[in-house]
Amino acid sequence: MDVPKDSRRMHDHPIPRMGGLAIFIGFLLSAAVFCTDLRTDRSLQSILLGAIVIVILGVFDDRYALSAKLKLVVQIVAAAIVVFYGDLRIDRLTNPFGSSLFSYLDLGVFAYPITILWIVAITNAVNFIDGLDGLACGVSCISSLNMLVIALLVSDAKVAIIMAALTGACLGFVPYNFNPAKIFMGDTGSTFLGFMLATISIQGLFKAYAAISFIVPFLLLGLPIFDICFAVIRRIASGRNPMEADRGHFHHRLIDMGFSQKQSVAIAYVLTGILGLAAVLLTVSGAMRTLIMLGAILVVGAIGIRIIMGATPKGKFWQHIKHGIPPESEAAPAAPTEPSEAASPVEQEAEHEKD
Image (tube, rainbow, N blue to C red):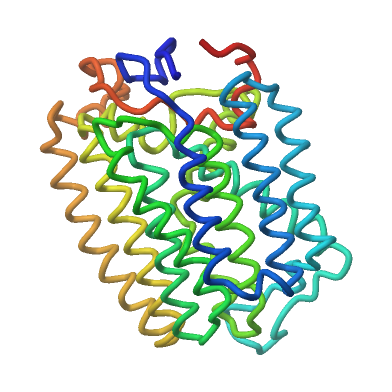
């Protein structure tokens, strides 16, 4: 059970948090039935083996609150299984700006640490955003659905089946996790989803030689990547430990601006959907049309944000910015919401006990 005990946990009553096992079992059963390549493909076997390690780690963490350093080490081990046993690596980075100087950059021996870093970072990035009811699960569902579409467009049946299984597992869980949540997926679910998205993006996207292969994964996982990068930069800039948990994540800021948790989650869904649409469009239509679409979205979005900011439930957001007053200072008590399961393995350094 997750018992609210700090400002980041905004729910007001104990809620069970082992729902990640349901996501994992649903995915595992579907993948085992429909993905025949699991019997012969070492890369898929390594991904599944690493996912099992991540899930076991999540179960123990949700129950006993393991130390952040231990969790980070185990995550690196799970990533290493994929890299060394499955021979799955980011071998090269393509040049998205054309081939006038070079077509791609061969990473050589640096492929190993960069791939492990990518897997561990995305695993924790999804965990970082798991702070509102239905947020991480819904964002992961949208990202995996877009990966499914891209896999179908490029005729990669193996990746398509895995992504279909992951999308279905998320869809089955969201109704129970959406506000007001009946169950949380805990670190078991959020780290599993992050691990799967990170590894499958290497299997299905980074392997391509086209320029899109470098950009597409960052578009599909744009929201979690932005949140984890912003969190680390924010903490370092303020002289704090980057592993120290705080209440400054993307979803926390939306709540502090006056949006309800349902509105905040909907905003995150829309942003993820737009980035995913851009990734799909980039795959089928080329860079120029995608840039035109993103430019139009940015213009409309900027106008919409300006209107929304002046009409938030707490109002006068621009006055807060103008006078240097943080919105939190006038914030009303936040509505009950899912705990900051965003307190990820690298954020829970100080949390060694569970209620």
